[in-house]
Length: 447
Image 1 (tube, one colour):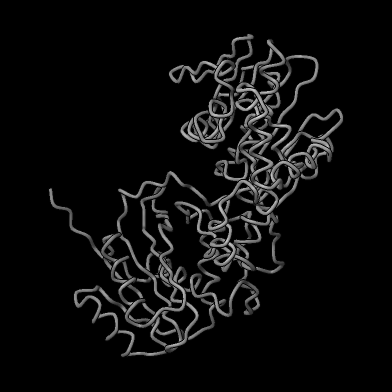
Image 2: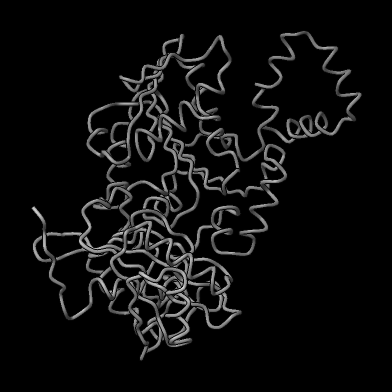
């Protein structure tokens, strides 16, 4: 869009209500129906492809920026203008590709005019436009599915959350690039929220790629004011807000026990929660009545290869600035929800009070009090080694917990968000109980 296009949109939206109504009434019915689908009028600058001849375009921006709409409109413009276009639509999974890229509120079916809407064949994962262009859905969890097919264009959505285990996301990308050889000028667009995964970092330094950066506020006209106020009130100034709203790619802290790249390698959102041998809730109680947060992290022990059992981080149930009764109830609820066989709580600050508060919430709680003889970073080092050896997986994304983990320094200080790594300390207690204990508890199976 040109600056003139933006000015026309702003002029129309800023017209007094009466003048805008008169202008709309002067239009024909067809003009009024077409107005809402006039993408060049309504899009903001960051949603339109960059000028010039480019091979790759990455839109890396905060949530609410309009990344999905930008990708879908780019695909629509190609499909409607090039009958020979063969387009790959690659999502983190087939379900997400269909739900977001095709059938979502900003997906290809929703943005098309009724007369130009493509036919969707879910069983074949195929969209067909009347002019002849086709688009096929692929999953970033299946690298081999892109070995062989040829395309002229590709739209890859949320590449920052593509599977990182066994370098799967990069393998998917490489197979896609090797097949992007149809037509006179193959092109690929990638839309993503910033995450410091190898693929995103690679594209940022690729000379064939143009990157569009942006924040949620750039699309504020199309977002509810209540939503903007709520998320800014909750996340403004936090690391999570900087990444998810402001579109900032968070970098590593030198000397930290965990790196974001390591955590992405350990992520496995398909981890099986039904075959766990033990489940433990780790608790780092707030210091006194005015503590910042109560760290509550749920982890399980799953069978691994041979004798190498692996830990699975299942949930971060931590709560901010709670009363003693509230954090105790949260611990009890987490233990019940995950059917935990042990709750491990640090008792350095509070001692018997910690036990009595937890017992008041649930007298049957399987409680174990632990006393820290070393600092948080020293306790965390053996747990960090488990991650390095590939023995821990995260069954999902835990942004606030992971921000704290990446701020714990090997030398003993803390450079993460907040005054204390409450969530990370709870994680350490849970995984230490599961994987670093000296005694193994026997189990009896009932047949």
